[in-house]
Image 1 (cartoon, rainbow, N blue to C red):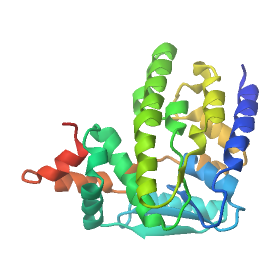
Image 2 (cartoon, rainbow, N blue to C red):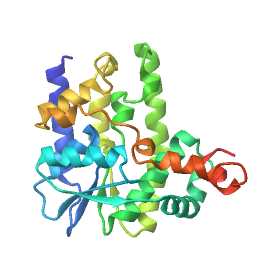
Image 3 (cartoon, rainbow, N blue to C red):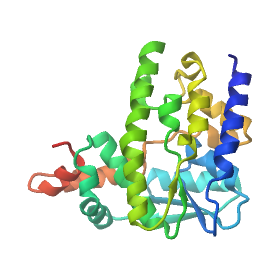
Length: 259
């Protein structure tokens, strides 16, 4: 399979996945960080009635700066929600039962997603979960041979589908709305997994194939190639939690570290 055929497969599956996203009365909120994953969703949905982009973060956080720049390049506005240590602490305590048995690397992003949904107002909400697992966007994929990378991708995707995305949707349900993840729709997952792992391997740029495909879909190159920090770092949530986890603050550790 060459890149052109891979793009054809992704196009067909993605169009089926995105067509049904957020159907129903507006507003439809894209949980937006300014990176390629949410940027492509924003690009594809930008003409929907009632569409809005939302980013959360501490003052001057990287995600808010990136989201502002990307939204301007997409020709849309972005709604910024400023969070503070007290907001993070309250969310940590509220969602502790869904976080405490997860390793930190998964618990903190889930907490960030919970904070974004809680800030977003009426749903449905659309997010970019799944792109990193399918297109090898995490740092732990660097340097892996094709077989090891394929195995790790399968493990990461199974964890996301079986635990983390399920809990994210449970949080959305408790907040009274629906979370949609177009990259996790079965047709898109099948299309992505049908692409040889050799085409999906990371090079100097993470998720290079996904970024080129996003450009092929019309996403401005400046957004498709924008470097992006993980949600917990880009928003500042991880930094706040580490301060709360200093000696003597047991509940914070319980909420973000495995038992």
